[in-house]
Image 1 (cartoon, rainbow, N blue to C red):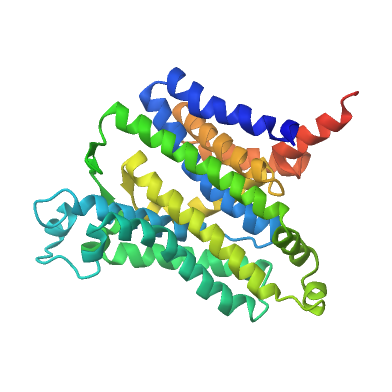
Image 2: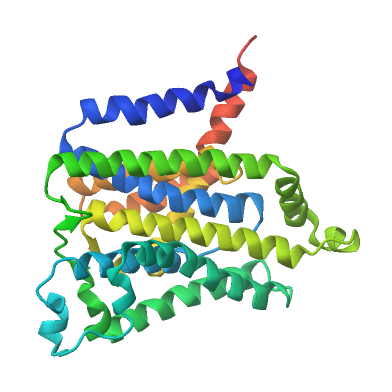
Length: 338
């Protein structure tokens, strides 16, 4: 057991101790952003890798969490209405915004809101035995509809521009390097705790049942279990992770907009999980960090060609290593002489 946990302990020390000491504030904030994506990827790894549910709309839940936190941050600025509402001609704070003045409500909405929506959607869809490509297309359509809704509500959500210009978080100046360093440690710690909890879940009886549903849903049903309930719970958990990641992403990056939660960002996260290795939770996390870093590195040098490089990377990995980076590492480990 100790030997099994050594890789996690080594990575935890590297992320929590070495990174804040070695990286400059800008690069540390970028790493925090990658770790936010890794939290979403962890949920995708649970739903897709373990449960066989290819969800192409995690950006919706990520956005719900992000907008919940952004609404709270905007209301802490004081001075009346948020700036984009003034520009849009709104004269009174909408009733929907009022509860988000309380941080507990905003955080709860960021996590429980996505979980509730996913639970309702999962109940409706999985009870009808919708699965495979049909479920993937449905979640993709949900992401597209969400973007249209947000863009159309200029006075309520900021429209295409979204929300930005956040200055304060729980009394701390977001522009200060110490605040960003603290946010990084929070994000890294949350990711670590969620990874351990998800790994424990996967290794439990429920995790084995989830894999059984993935590999033979009809057989599980004939044994007396309810596959729809198992899949709904998993889908809701993955949505909650995405919502929490969105809430952490906003103070780290300083913006939330429809461009960050549409169809393309959702697909990019799925690609990242596939590159890392969807059947391993560590692969999902690794894939998100690697793809995030690659996007930054390549876009700095090839701003117009990043999407082509991303597509080429995905094709290369899926062709040569269908199980992703983790699969390659595992194959190398087994081939090593003992």
